[in-house]
Length: 220
Image (cartoon, rainbow, N blue to C red; front, side, top):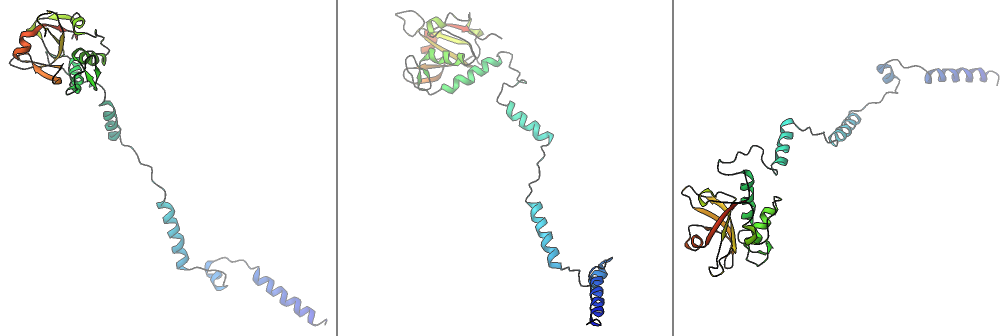
């Protein structure tokens, strides 16, 4: 028993030295059977990293040109600061005409001021009110607003007043000038019983005979 014990201790020490040895190189690790490497494992890791990177959405950068484009789109809904009106018209007058033309085709309705129906003064009253220009509600009182001008001075945005009832001899109809052609023909928009809101010409016999006066509300 005493002879076996020293041999056992010797074997135990040799085994401990083998397991506790320090590995100083990849080659030595392979030789000692403690290094493990496979191409499959490496490929798997690479694939996982690739998926992880592709899942991250890159931050999109906005270029200076794109910012300018967006700004232009936003400002396009506002009055154009570069607008240069023709010598015979103003920017506000043009905008008034643009807005009143939205009512073309609306049916006639006495006392109406909406697209559900409107009369002549209601159309003019509603349009000017969009620009914070307050006018009387009736055509007769409206004829006192602004200043009276000569027919040859009439231009886009002016008001035309008529007397459609010769017996009563008073203003009872109003229209808004939408265009004055090169040959002097005056076009105006108004509301009639038969056609609703429509565009007519002052050169038409009926309106030429019933015309009373022209007023300018929008001054340059």
